[in-house]
Length: 196
Image 1 (tube, rainbow, N blue to C red):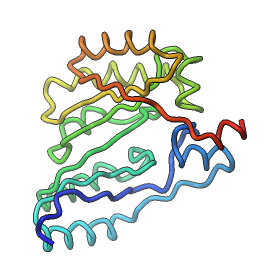
Image 2: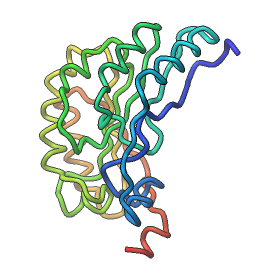
Image 3: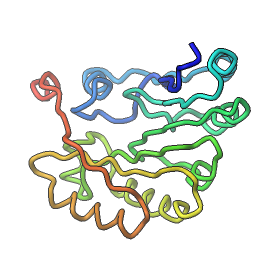
Image 4: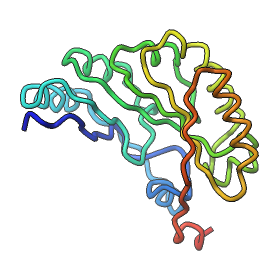
């Protein structure tokens, strides 16, 4: 068991968007379910047990969800630090957060910004229900703390047939901000499109 180096442990049950390339987004599109949060005591119990069995481990705190909506996010990260664990977080940035606190946290190893455009009409197709103005403001704020952060900060750009121009703009923003630009082919679940 000591060879386990990564643990996928979503700390929320859902997301705030309805993205067509995501099973959670597809579910949200059909019926908005209430997001539930992992209890901090349960989190501590799991994290401490994994430490006893495997030692220090890399936690992915998301799996088709938005982890930063958890009201005790920083407290959960503090628990990871207590056990010498690190974490990987991906966010769609459609929320307000203390970015300085997040990016300066010792447990944060990788922070991924999920985005599909920089103009609302383009962005809304890949990140349905999102507000690109808020996302861009958050990226601007995050960029202030990137130079001091020990975490790898990556923009995961979802490439589609119609957003190449936005991708070029976002790549320039990343170059100026010290954020790694990582484009990848976006996906759209057919069932979601048919129900649109």
